[in-house]
Length: 135
Image 1 (cartoon, helix red, strand yellow):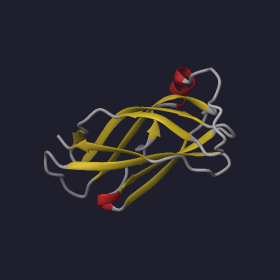
Image 2: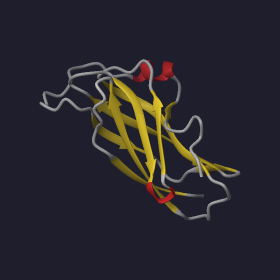
Image 3: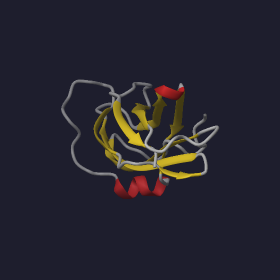
Image 4: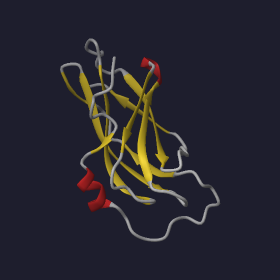
């Protein structure tokens, strides 16, 4: 199995700037990014052996802009990072998560996806875990 070339990416860079929030960042002393919320509806949508799901991620970072979305699917030993352009230290963005399987995945299979963010300083956020069903 492999990730989509577009998996774990922001829907479009323009969308990020359109949905980015303004306001003050948290006063946390942490220099790593923080995922404040990750909402991923279930199940995946499937087309052949491609599975994807769109979600929303809200984040903040006290020290640097977010540069990378990191997605892992432990059951299949998949690990992918995708560069993010146009992100700031805080905001909300639409993301697409998913993978391409070598063969069809059985309907009803639950797939764990681990999501984190990396900032311009190379610091990685907390990991948010979502379990998503295959249709």
